[in-house]
Length: 91
Image 1 (tube, rainbow, N blue to C red):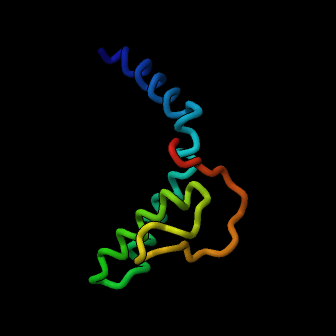
Image 2 (cartoon, rainbow, N blue to C red):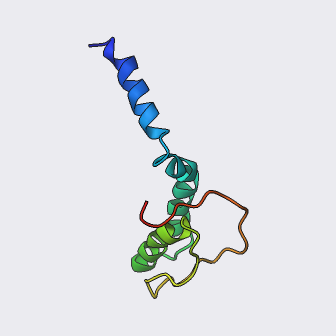
């Protein structure tokens, strides 16, 4: 059974590096930072605003920075962004 571990690890690693998952891996650091920012940038007692900011991540990583469906957080607060790999909606 122990001899299967390296093989299993290789299979999982290969799957994570597939085309469909690779863009998400590129965003992992930003996703973690976004979660931290949602909590740190919002005053205590405004849980719904934290959630609205968190949900905006899906639109942000697909290069949509305004028109968010939650009226509590309708657009991103950042300015111009550096070029990056965006994740198209639905993938």
